[in-house]
Length: 394
Image (cartoon, rainbow, N blue to C red; front, side):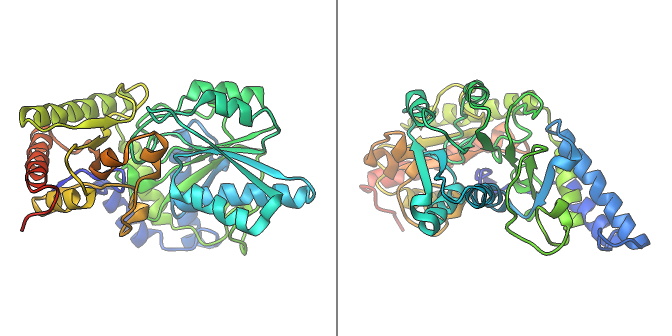
């Protein structure tokens, strides 16, 4: 099996799994308890929090541990809207986002809109053919007071990166506006520092960087406020109640500590991507890239390709899977749902090209030989589907 669905999840590092097993065995106490077992667990949790904070040049007090990136996104979006609505019941809360956001932001905004009606205004900014924000639409949206700007830094379907310099200018020109970035796909793969980037909130997730599922965190800049989604205990400074999963946090910290430097990741991922595309050309397989072509505007190793002549991307995905290559046609959050990509639609990709589009995402654990083999398998699957008029062959 050649796994090229690393935007959906990654294979956990053996070291991370071993760390989790050790911590689960030796630090089983409740980290909030004051006895010896609790103190041992609390110390392990504190060490993990320090590693996670240091990865963004944040303070440990600014790290809120959550169970997933989805929970973190829901926490900040719903939490900010709830806090603002309760503080000023007669004021309309304005949230600006993009047309290419992750389902965990799009869906929670739809849910909040249903609950709050005219009390919430959601403004959706369009993107260009490269998948980047249309600056003139953003400027128009910011002409009125905006309470929260929530954006995906690295798109989970195309790898397209939003312009951080633009966001720095926007945030500094609108100091009262809160800025939230979902960096789940770019965390540890690009240089990110909260001392340089004027964000109020950042979302991460462990399982995208070879850590465990069930572990994530939300960076919350000191002084930024929101209402919690989970209440009960005093965990996470009353921001997220519930006993922390110490083993998962330790596994997350281990994965972060072992992550290669961003430039090293970029070099390796760029090489693998180039090898895949080169092999497709060698096989005579036509494809078109959806999104920015250069790696200053797109994450190396994440690329969305359309294959002309393929009428059904699910058929192509299944054909690849049967021959040992795991890929996706859209976000894993839409698993089991056959639908068009809202991301590609927002970028203006034609319905015909959307029909034959797949997302590929490489891993630092993979080799050039593996990637070339995956490209040969993909090319053969494309040939079979095109030859048959787009219908899968037995």
